[in-house]
Image: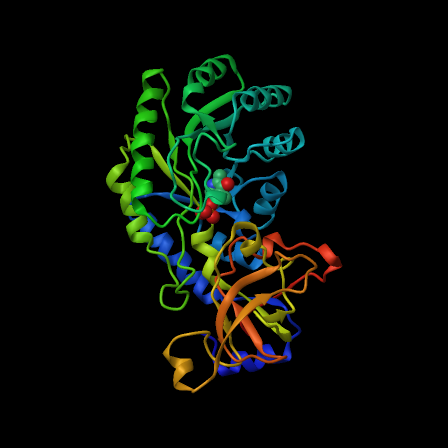
Length: 393
Ligand SMILES: *Cc1c(COP(=O)(O)O)cnc(C)c1O
């Protein structure tokens, strides 16, 4: 994936760093834009996936809105050029300070996750003499068929309002004078690759939209959240998700009434493939049972494998790709390594038993598909330096 000029450039740089392929990012954004515009669907970028300013700049340039999950994300969205009326604010625990900030900023909508939150937003809006637009995040009890650590739409999850509680929501909405109820919101999980799951979601949305209509509400926005997955196993051959197929599921299965808008909140699918974590082999440690490749990057730079048992392709880019015919052709000796970081935690391991060409101190190792939930989760545990970001020249 990297040509020899790029690799020579990497060799001169201090590691570890995130390398952003802005070109691939733009191609991905364009594919999403084209596929969603076909149906007049609106996309808000879930900025928690990656709020690197260069990424935000590219996303914003396609006219997407921003989905934020904290007051500071609302602030970052505005500061990075997103229009205030294209910013939505979700999250199960919004503080009063954050709600007040979002009210002052006149965002498009609060995605509200409990009945109590509705009454609090109403009180805070009233105190300012404002009306807050709200959507109710409903927990549709749909199995996202993804890793259980990143599923959000089951009754055992903390997110959203369960359907049995909706009569209480209606009661609260009727009592709250400073709220404008505009939509219903769903987000059932992340890294979803089975399109059947989204079809099941559509069926729930249709039923709930009808239910609210029967209660006398006019739902303007159907917000179906995000969650579209990417191919962590084939970052080179499948670098852009199939947005056409994804949006078509909603076009085919969602009942959209005249005047209703359909909103999406994609994060991972837009940014995961555009970044790679580049690090260097510090040491090779051969044990009796295991060989360890000790990198200068660890869970402080990319925590997904340790936090969610996530898979990332790992390539020794000084030697060619980690597996497949090309490396065999070069006659390189293959070895199994546990690829680990330098952090003082046993869980600080990117992957066990990775088959790589025999590797040496100083080799560059690329951890692929690291653009989503990567750089945003860096920490300075062990007082580590802040990881750098590098862009094409
Ligand atoms: C995280 C999140 C998203 C984005 O999820 P992806 O899997 O990255 O697409 C969308 N909506 C809400 C409310 C979220 O919390």
